[in-house]
Amino acid sequence: MLLLLKLNKIEITHSQDDLITLGLGVASNNYSIDDIVDWINSRIAKQSNFR
Image (cartoon, rainbow, N blue to C red; front, side):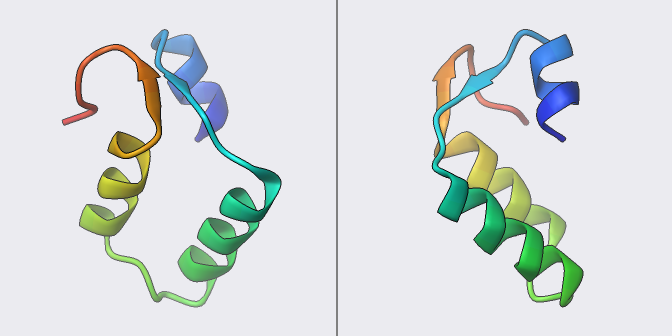
């Protein structure tokens, strides 16, 4: 995901803990696609909203 964001010139700010929490949430099926989009949008440093 981070590579795809970078290729699309979307920079996000995040901590390692943020990424671990997201990864574990996705792996355990606790996050919907909307949750992931919200997570990305809340961390965008440059660019307009992801969606």
